[in-house]
Length: 275
Image (cartoon, rainbow, N blue to C red; front, top):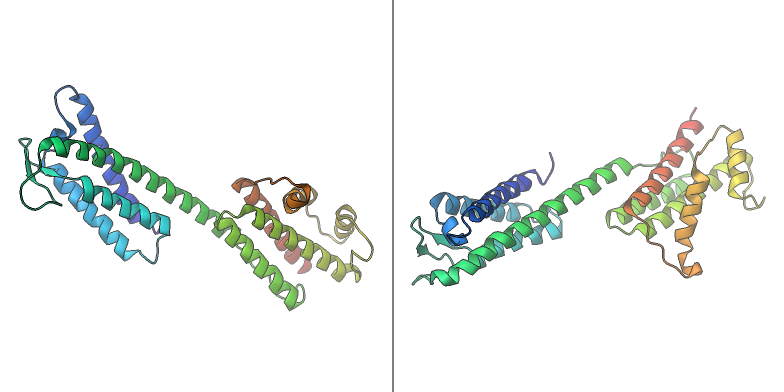
């Protein structure tokens, strides 16, 4: 179950409630204020219940939720604390939650309630978008994760490949796309060079082989890494950006594609070697 499922349910309920208020307000725009539209027990009770749920969700998930999601929740609660008033059915204020004692004038309440409704809606939509972004990223990361099996290469080389690949995933999760792509290049170079040396008992550097020549020789041994030359050229562009004096920012899709290629190289190295 998605860790944000309960929060999303609360947010969607809140969004529906506030959009309903906006629709009602627009219907009677010439005859009332937004405070009058919210002047009913059903609305007041629903809002208070939702805020209580948000408070509960916040404290129950301090260690589970990303910092930005927690900030969104606190902002929604703050908007409520600073602007929300409960108003009776006949349109007069019977309780101001944050102010004990005499009730403020409705002329004071109206702009606050407007801010409460509109600002809350904006924050809800930001929070939902952020959750969807995290869920998409998490789904990508689950799909991209992989561990190179021991026994194909020497243990120290396998460990380096796995540690570097894990760093690639971390960089991708943190949107450090240039770093992720650069490390993918390092992994692919390490795998191809080590694989060639294992098959031909000679370092490709010693024979001064370019990638095309190296890949042609690997194909003769049953390895066909399709599309790798084009991707390696793309990796080289990003890795050498400082030398060429121009920073090229890769996209998330571009980075994910290169990580997928790197994973494919690892899998093919394993599968053919074990046949």
